[in-house]
Image (cartoon, rainbow, N blue to C red; front, side, top):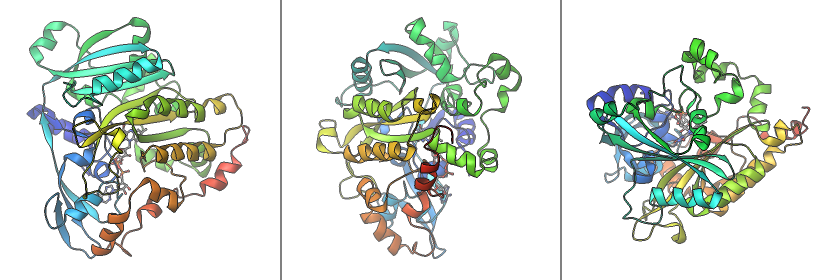
Length: 415
Ligand SMILES: Cc1cc2nc3c(=O)[nH]c(=O)nc-3n(C[C@H](O)[C@H](O)[C@H](O)COP(=O)(O)OP(=O)(O)OC[C@H]3O[C@@H](n4cnc5c(N)ncnc54)[C@H](O)[C@@H]3O)c2cc1C
């Protein structure tokens, strides 16, 4: 139950942070371990799971075990990420931390032209060059098919940041939402500033990337921010409590929430497909290594040969984050959400990618097994007495409502 907010408060004053975290203060370290975690440092070290040294887990028979990469529970260790609590209860984690400096020197680089920004994201993240010296943090936000802002951040000492006169405490409650602020650089041109590390790590917290905009369209209004901006983001428990069946149906028929891990070799196609199916911007891009662990593969398959960075055991992938209202819904036209999500999932399987399982899935079990390798997972479930004690992964993550039926009911723009 330790949250990202708790760990940032604890580690940063001591000069450290987690190697991989998430920019949402209420996310838990356990949820990231059993779901998935990825951040703007992941082009250096991969997913959150790569930074987990050990898991302490209570198994289906009530016994407590500690699983590490090399001990007798190493098979369990490899299957716990992306398992969503279907192999045991997590009660302890040992995580890799990194030394930090108190500020991030951030450069905002606006770019016009899809080919140009895709090439620059690949180049800056060292996607195809293992010797490339990369920045500490890399992220891109795409505002239309042809316009993006690349953000490149490096740790910096306090004296340099403080002398610069360019400090921005951007996570304060009255400041503009981060993605709105970043968008201004498309007109203002390239720029740089210094951001206190804690503010940087939680920069997407208040607007939950850009999800809050569809709930509170006036949330970025300066008056709203000044007087009640501290109320954001809404608490997950509050959102769950206020989700009626109608609201639940609209979470996928009138909006889209998807995070998908896709190979960066296909970056242009990812954006084209997302635009064709949903046509909603901004789109989030976080570069992330996906490692080939050989025999010791859990639910993620090794990247394909042409996706590997030459001379390494990893391929550069990225999170494609698509959140918002599809343009067909905005124009009050027919939008077949199930068809759109299924085509996105088909594309993801075709290129060897993975859908984050916190989001709704529309795959049948056969398709799910094409995306995720459940070979070792099934063996581990049997060996560690999870069968009968915990649901199967597919059962746990598939939507709790009949999305096919609900999807049909809401295709019509007036529904
Ligand atoms: C808009 C949006 C954007 C996102 N963007 C990103 C992103 O950029 N990068 C990223 O990495 N992720 C992103 N995520 C997804 C996020 O990583 C997951 O939701 C993650 O699981 C968050 O942690 P949590 O504490 O909320 O997890 P939860 O949803 O609470 O938990 C995840 C799973 O693990 C299980 N679980 C949790 N704790 C335990 C335990 N102690 N024992 C057993 N089982 C347990 C839960 O039952 C659940 O199935 C995004 C999510 C949203 C909504």
